[in-house]
Amino acid sequence: QERGRSEDRFRAGITAVPAWFRFLYATVRAHLKMAGITVTELNIYPIKSCKGMSVAEACVTPTGLQFDREFMIVDAKTGWFVTQRTAPALALVQPELPSDVLGVQRPNAELDQIMRVSAPGMQTLVVPLRKQAISTAVTVKVWDYTGKGIDMGDAAADWFSKYLSKTVRLVRHTGTRTTDAKYAAGYETAFSDGFPILITSEESLEALNSMLEVPLPMNRFRPNVVVKGGAAWEEDRWETFRVERRRTLPGPMLVRALLAPIMQSFKAAVWVGRRAARALTAGKVGAGGNLDLKSVKPCSRCTMTTTCQDNGEVMGDEPLQTLAKFRSGAKLNWHPEKWSADVFFGWNVVTNNRNWDYIRVGDYLHVTSRRGVFHAG
Image (cartoon, rainbow, N blue to C red):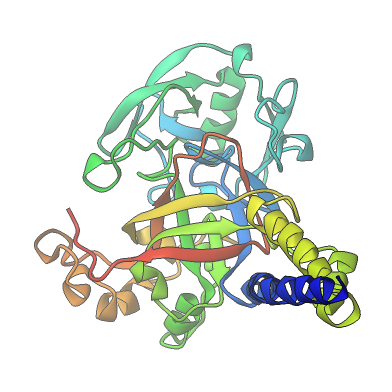
């Protein structure tokens, strides 16, 4: 009988070893992720072409980060969008959203809230966020897109018209605007130039700045998501990637699991290891879930990148002049017959997320598939 119990303990010990090593691998892998590619900056631009808001976390909707490019200034007669390309003074217009409408999973938080808008020499403009407050629909245009926007009223129109010295209206996104089917069929965006999310990397900016006489800040490129931890221009090869929470195990569970084979029986190691592994894979340990994104098109850069976002002044030809030397469509062999003279920095990203998942500064970016050569169009 004693021999039978000994054999049972031996078999339990043999069975425990693979489970314990699987758990140890999962634990080490989870902690190593912290040293990989991470999100270092999140930006929302509530009014297209105006100043952005740096946030620690943001809801991700089918049209991008919540409230990003949800408002836009348009010509009062034609409905054509107005940006820093023709009105660089917009760089000094600062929209401010209340904290109650930003952050984690608050799809209805805008009710009874306001957006404050400030600019040099202007009194603060108050814009209601309740969509039902104003319901006049007007025709708006962004490049090839023609659709409807909600006019935000005469007070907002007069404020922006006075500031820009031209007759304009402030409108809000409504309805559905789909992205270019050649690159991302079945996805949506608001009033961005074409796609819902723009991602850039700190390493690529460092590489560009090493070629410039005067280094530029990241805000020249107006990204939504900034990451760090990869090689310069590595994002050119990212096709799909997942934004993951930093999952860690509670201290007591981690200690018990690691010490179980030594301090306790192998059977205890199996129980603790399996429980911890289930917690890691099911997302029950740590905060939040995962967010899947797809990189669909490099971002061609325009003269807005030459406008200083701190003073609204056009500062010359950089970074366009330097980017043309090594980041043009011709140099990269990206659709050279169409994009030969276009220059690129950052990538446009889409998502089908409809669960109001969120992204945080500090999240880990895991590349799930890579492209060989980007084929445009």
